[in-house]
Image (cartoon, rainbow, N blue to C red; front, side, top):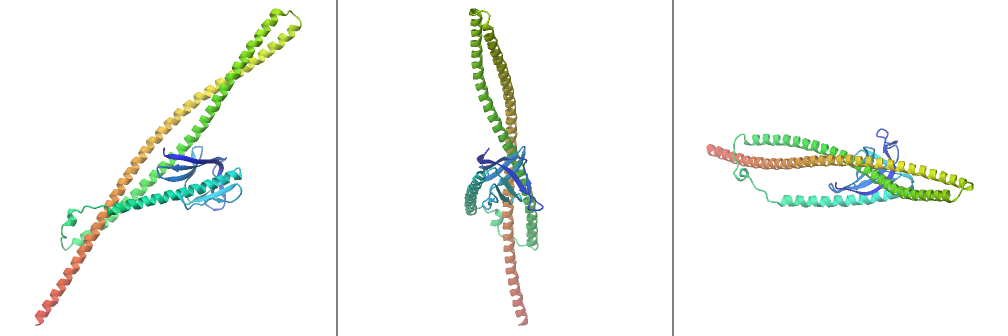
Length: 354
């Protein structure tokens, strides 16, 4: 999926009251898992915490963020994008220290990733500027002078500005829709990963208990057979009398062992039923992953459309720049013509006066 876990811990999550900006509002009823993740697709680091099916924290770490320890077991940081402040309450001071150190490491990594991304963008921009551009036939042909020429070009420039504004609004809308889909996908993905981890741990524990109980069952069965053989030998070689008491004790021990075996059999059946439920939940998880992949494909298509729109917008900006340069050239030619006409008029006036 392109998302790699880096560090996880458990803490109580709080958010600042948006009204008073002073009081803390609990975002979870109990301690939840708070994790650092690296998103390789977008080259960003994130802090994510999921409670049930809801994303409590979905914060992109930036170099300007600072994690502040306000007490021995509590720390906070501000997220300007979400316009809120998150607070974490830890069980021990050591957990707070570990989270603070990891926050500093991730912030430095985010700064390095941003610098590399900016260097790459500058290099791409330089290559784009240095690339040769084909001139159209319209630019190569000499300008045609007419009475309404500049006004017509100015009107076309205003129309291009209106078109560019509408294109920008449409791009913003498409980007916001893509971000919402991505947040929903990430929240559902982390919920599935958390559930899958818990189910796998429960399955391993159940399998270990089953194996242990099977060994105990085999030992109990062997002990039962041995006791039965002893009872049969005593009945065969010893008459009535003191052997009756021993027989009763052995019978009682045998009944206790059979009851214990029955209880272990019931526990094994319960574990087997839980294992069947786990397979069903695993099927549901596969179905959810399939849906996530479909949504990712839709998101990729949306990004492709955004790139095409941005390319069209760039072409429109280039056309507007070309029109502006043509208008400037036409104005300069008009100024020259007017100056020549003025000189001609003055010369004619001088001739008439003579």
